[in-house]
Each structure stands twice: as C-alpha cells, then as structure tokens.
Image (cartoon, rainbow, N blue to C red):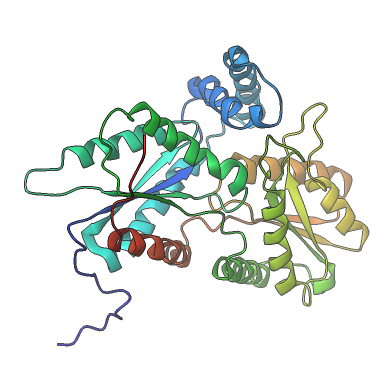
Length: 366
C-alpha cells in the first residue's frame, strides 16, 4: 500500500545521528500567588531595567512591591484569578512537537521554558545540556538547540530575553565542553503571511457568529490589541515597530469590509515613561465617536491567553460600559490551541532544523 503522506510530512532518515532540541520560550505566569514576588523580580531584571535605570540591589524590593500590586489585582479585584497561559502553552508545545515529529521523527524534541516562573529557560537549557552530555545507553541526544520565543511581537526586546537566558547557562558552563554544534533562533513572526491570514480568518469567523443586532459592517468597531511598550529602551527596539507592522497587515485585509478598525495598545503605564498610544479605552472611544454600535477586541500581540488579554480587556470593557451603555462589547480569544497554528509554527522551525541536522560543528574560540 502506498503512503498517502506527502514527502514533506514523511519522517526523514536520521542525519548523522544528530538531534535537535526545540525550546519554546514564553513569559509564563504564576500558578501560586506566593510566587508573585519572585516573578516580578525577574521581570524587573529582564524588562523594566531596560528602560528605567534600576540598581540591582533594588530588584528584590521592586519584585515585592509589584507582587503586592498583582496580589491585589488578581486576588482581590478579580476574585482569585488564575491565568490559563501555562496550561495553554503546554498544549502548544505538544501540538508543535507532533507537527515537527511528523517530518523529523525522533530527531526533534520540543521543550518549554518560561522567563519568569518554573520551568525557567535556564533550568530547561541545563537539562538539555545534561541529557546531551550523558545520553541514554545505546542512544543519542541533542547536538543542536533551536530557541523559539512564542511571543509574536517584541522580538528585539522581550524575545531576546530567551537568548540572554540561554547565554547565561552557556557562560556558567564555558569551562566544560558544551554539546551543541549549533544554536539557532526564530525571531518575531509579526509579518509572517500564514499567521496574518489565520488571524484574519478567525476574526471574520467570529464576526459571522456574533449577534450584532442588525448592525452594518460600518457600525462594527474592531480593536486589534498589541502589547504596548515604552518609546525608548537600552539599545533595543521595544516591539512597537513589530506590533504596528502586524496591525497594518491585518487591517489591510479587513478594512474594505470593516472600516472601523484601530490598534489598541495594552500598556503598563509608569511615571515619566511615554508608552504607545492609543490604549484600549482611547481606541474604543474613537471608534464609538465614529458611529460604532458594537466593539470587538481581538488579541494580535499574543498567541496564548494570559492576564493581559483577559483582565486588561475586561477592565476596559467594564469602564466603557459605564460610559457607553448602549454599545455592546466582545472579547475574542488568542490563537491558543488552533491546530492550524501548530502547523504554521512548525513550518517556521523546519528550515532551521534542516540546516542544523545537515550542518557541521561550528568552531569556537576562547
């Protein structure tokens, strides 16, 4: 019987006994409020310190103070909210691994690591190195590492945290013979056509399913939400460029049918720091002023649901409902565990995996 699989999806023959560890890197969110302080301390180190001068000795105090604010926000204001991000990220890890192993078989294994909570990126890289240095008897383990931040935008800023944390492990082990022939990286996919087409299709399908009370398309306001950022950081672009590029491409495919579309930046406003505008409420008010009778919020800057895509949007909707009670509001979901997204994400990894499996060890100099 002839296989119905295409050559691109059939498992390939092993490449010189090599394997690739694919590391999906994300923010992660706490699963216990006791971890809020350490979570925010890590966020202060890797994010806030890039655009605000913060002495290292202040990191613990900043983490404690921000953790206290989060405890009130999640535990009191939002009735013991717990983010679904980590659970959804695991589903994405499994889905992407299944797609990759259709083509590469056991040559590829997918791991996950978080910036600010367990399992930390550094811990996962250490585990991969340990496995590569002591493979199972008669077996083989990883000679290559593919770092894959699953963040969509902000790659030049937060995406590079993954590289910083990987390099921390390499530096800590530089006296030893590291097992990797190569380490590669997948940057932001804010301008990838397949991802943009997926978002557009999801938005159109959601609008077709929604009851818009007889509204014309010109009376439906769409706010495409992207993670905001400060205008300046220490030598890094903050993701506003990637976020705007993603919005522009999605808007271009929707605006002929739905002319009332705005970007909505989800910001973490701080004193003396100028953040991207318009924020969610500003964007909604502008569309309502142009005649929108219903407002739909769709996350663009995230692939996984988290407290920002849920709580920040819900808070904005609550405020808007008080001001404009006759307007209806809807919050749509991220791509989350859409099987098509797993296939798209795997396709971005395939060229890098092929290059590493067919390449030779890169010389290093001390």
